[in-house]
Length: 240
Image 1 (cartoon, rainbow, N blue to C red):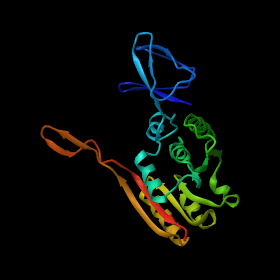
Image 2 (spheres, rainbow, N blue to C red; image 1 turned 60 degrees about the vertical axis):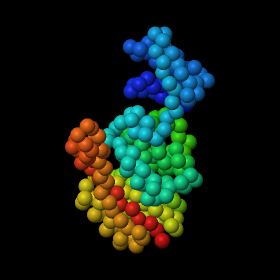
Image 3 (cartoon, helix red, strand yellow; image 1 turned 90 degrees about the horizontal axis):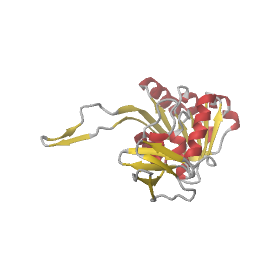
Image 4 (cartoon, helix red, strand yellow; image 1 turned 45 degrees about the vertical axis):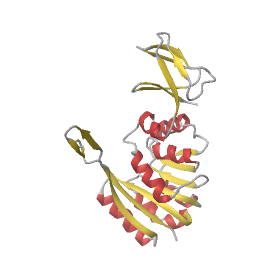
């Protein structure tokens, strides 16, 4: 069970029995450590033990690229209705943030990653998130495995060739099953939407994901000027 050791704005991942060495001192994590415990270094600096939660996966997973942002994960969960016990086919594992979130919800996830080195990192990440039993990380191109797959409640994609998989969604999804596709570019989102339309999927919609943080100071309140908060485009649809 990997836990977080928190001191102010500093966070460290450790497993029971492991040692933490920082400028704040040295401590050994007890084998029976529990969330909420307070551990003290040899310099009398206190660290609070915290259980890993979803946002912590985004911040602490080893990265092999840009991971899916929590806000996009939230939209996928909310729009597809993925729930405990659902079977999910995911492609474009990457860092494994989305697969990790879905596994922690209680879904059974089969996720494909083309690059073997990325897949290995994702396996390590989902193990750290304590969902290795729920998330099956496979190395390979999902488009080459579609004939052997089916019976999924949810389909989630973050790959350049997502449209080719969406075209097969009627064969992959159970009746009433949903899909959620992340596209970094408008052109890819259009291809996905067209593939979903041609596959006669219902409730088709694409949205841009934008979120702006707010600044509060003595002068007043306004959206932050540091960025527009754009991440990409999400397309959702459902099999009748």
